[in-house]
Amino acid sequence: MIRYICSVCGYIYDPEVGDPENAIHPPTRFEDLPEDWACPICGAPKEEFVVAE
Image (cartoon, rainbow, N blue to C red; front, side, top):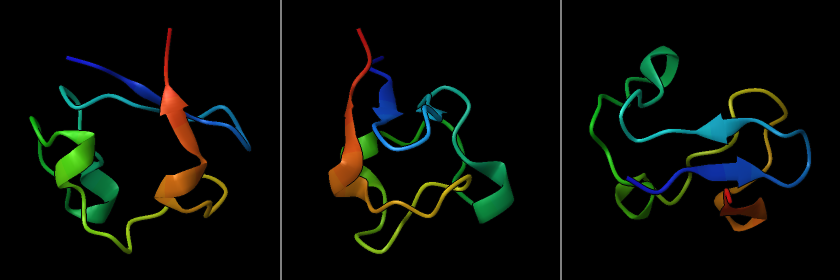
């Protein structure tokens, strides 16, 4: 699965892990995250994430 990285703080969203602290269970694809989901570290919106290489 494709992972995404926050361009502000470097947090990596991995669909195979999800974001359990915010009730995002694996395997939730990045595209399927709620529109108001934000980086759990710095609060950056989804628009600040890029595909991790």
